[in-house]
Image (cartoon, rainbow, N blue to C red; front, top):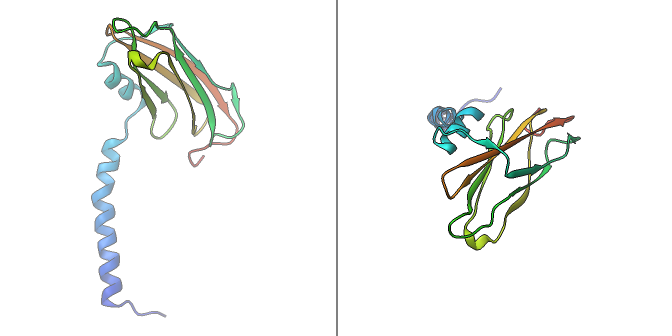
Length: 149
């Protein structure tokens, strides 16, 4: 049987205090998909169209699921895509990534990989320079979850 020294007690106590201090901050950060999208759009509704989200219908491994987005836009100073958010509705932290664009981007296209915890909808919403929002949604079936599932 090991005796706990004063130093051990101080280290354990400090770790416990740090964990308690961090836990509420982490809990406060966690939002559901609906609130993430409402914050992104400022409560405005998004219409269907203009945005294409390419993802596999079935992801054998949720740890690395490819996605590509493109938005139909001339990308001029008067008419361009400002940003696009990707949200995974069933993930513990639904906001996956936000891509920022400008007229100098030339095209509003991006690709990346993401983790999916389980079978779920992935939503892409684009904000245009005129203040409008456009969205699309894809369901991806996940056979092995990538967020601890």
